[in-house]
Length: 163
Length: 318
Image (tube, rainbow over all chains, first blue to last red):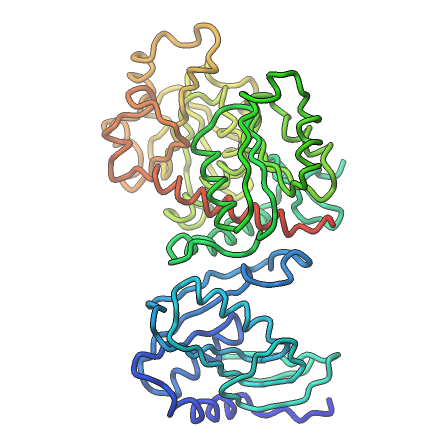
């Protein structure tokens, strides 16, 4: 409770402003289930252009499957565009260890060879365990390892909460 | 007695029968299979989930489709698959099932997929394997064929949406059919209000009415107003003695033709677990017709088997 949490909608606006100059005409946006999809949808609305939107559930690519098994609610991945040679903007709500992003990149390559992947996250909370850093970030916060920061969506409004 | 299919933490560890599995578990398998559907349409038709796991197809009874779809499913999960047709190997040299299993365990197997002509064979193996090994029943005698039952439910859900308003007819050789038993069990658990079996008396097991089905001996009455018609294979190879006058006579009474199909709902789907006897239980015109979903069933079987293997392998008895 020591950290004052920023407003998630403000962070989306900030993220959109940071991303905008770097998008190509054929860029596609890919959100990671579940929070990353919410952010990706908002981001696309804020950017105002019709970028194709894909959705990834990385359950089949997790590196802790043999320890904890399959997530009970796996959702389908939907990539409704050709990944081959296309620049992708990968979107997640919180960057923590980096393992989710690694799994997401592995999955994306099974759809084709993108020309580039850039990473946009709403919050970079530190605690990285892999050499993965965001290209665009809404806010960088130091969250202690015993706490979790969670994105929530209530009636289409995004907000952040500490658990 | 605890369900031998569940681990001490209550997770699915073996899949031996659909009897007794709660609706939530069946739905979770179907939902997971839905997520695997798109893997078959990608550039790389593989996910790394079971990388490094060894899966043994133990087929004590011949089968092409079931074995092949299990093999494809395992390979799409990145597992290593070994196919053993034991009907033609060491069993004929006198090795017992448990010795076979012990030898494969010594080769660091992680999962056995078992097809056997004896009812209860998969249960027997599941009782005796090391705790980290999962067993999937790929058909045991007349008892059960749970993954076929699941892929049939997956097919019905894809074409008909939910189960709560459906009328389903299972037509043909129920007596010898492990598929029918698994289907009736799953349909009932998932809340199908009316399950019918349509067959001559000689092809119905005694006490079938206790499974909660309506019994019909007349084909037209039996499929009237049904949403789903599941045709069963006439099990020539299992038929002992004269239960039927002839294949021609059977086709006349119970073979699904376009004329008979007209008694079902106009949007009814026609299913068959394969392999089909054309001109015996089903007419080619129906089998290849617009209401047939027999080939989609095969495709869905891969996604469903991927889901089952992924859930069992992650079931955590380690």
